[in-house]
Image (cartoon, rainbow over all chains, first blue to last red; front, side):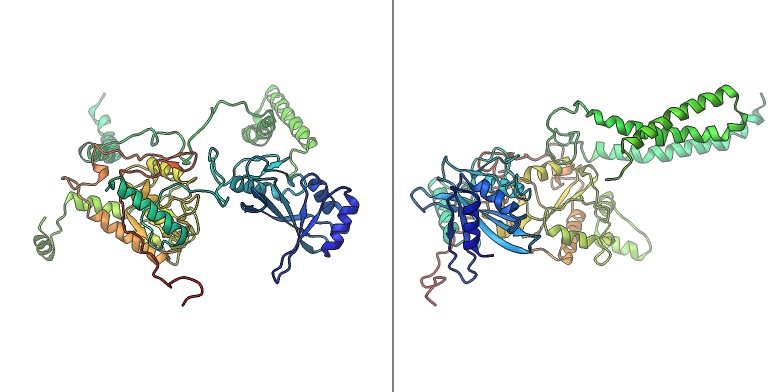
Length: 189
Length: 126
Length: 216
């Protein structure tokens, strides 16, 4: 599957869409296609229904947090699409939110690929991406009423440190902070 | 009444007493044991109705979906009717005409239900 | 009863025992576990009950599907924070005397997921654990060993006196605090009556040159 050709096919089928090839420099060379938010659903529908591509299977939905990129950063969602009929894939498709705070809406692909339902819920739960058009967008791993999104890179977990036998790096730093604070507080033995 | 007549029931009376004692004595021992050694400790979670670990929420008095009448009808046809068919078959030759007609009406009503369920494709295993 | 006298009597063909011994002997040989698995350790637990390892030899083949009929809870696997209230609630619903085996690294400390966002750092923060088994997952032999340890523990329990266990005391509750889901963590994060250990082993700073890339 030639990504350049796929790109030009999409541009011919969905007028006005802005696509961008994200180059993967690693030896695997799995380049991906960045979709714009406005036309993403139409593009995805084309990818599924086009007789030549026929990408009928969405195997994986995942989230990526980019806190330091482009100003306030953004959240990214990555879809891996395969074709069970044409036996080709994966086509990697990405979408980016506007920022990480309020404009975190992306179109949901669940109406196109049912397999995306739980994985989009997981991305919503762990990264806080709000999928418009998702039939049942609730938390899936954490409990209802949990306030954070634990897979974001600036997530601060509850200060609940105790004996850490193999502490290193960030855990060591926080464990030391915690024990220092305990000492200052008089030490609750 | 002769006393000899009562004498023959004595072994049964003894057996009755032994059987009741055999059943009650472990319960009594357990009761005494708990009085003496291990106290009862009920609590709100322990006394909860459900034992699946989740806290129960909402009300159990909800409206059932009307579709469940299908199960009721199929249950009547295959279970209740079968139960009545057996005594009907056993007593068939000795029945009066009225009883036989009453039974046939009953069977016809349920057979109609079976035809109806068949037509509604209730019996098709998806 | 004096052990010497007892042995002496048994050599003469006289069997003597105490109520406490009979009570504990009966209990330790009919410990019924709760059918309850949380993660991969449960597979080892299942293997332990099957023909090859045969937990039935110790009187524990009857895995009860209801906490009301179980004596032993084998916490087999990772306890997530979302699951912890359910585990505590099941434990509370078990009748006394009840015992807990924490099986595997996750159940005793959080294991490889210890600093994870949704993993409890050991079930002994909420319920009293009698036997801990390390391992990831522990082999069936380890579970059998833990089970025999528990049997020894049951055998050594006193029926009367100040040292008698919790289930024989009227003043101690058999229920423990069920944690609630909070905005960031479980509330409370631990039961201070059970878990008040402040292990102040200050983590050692890595020595210069060690564990740093580019230096060997």
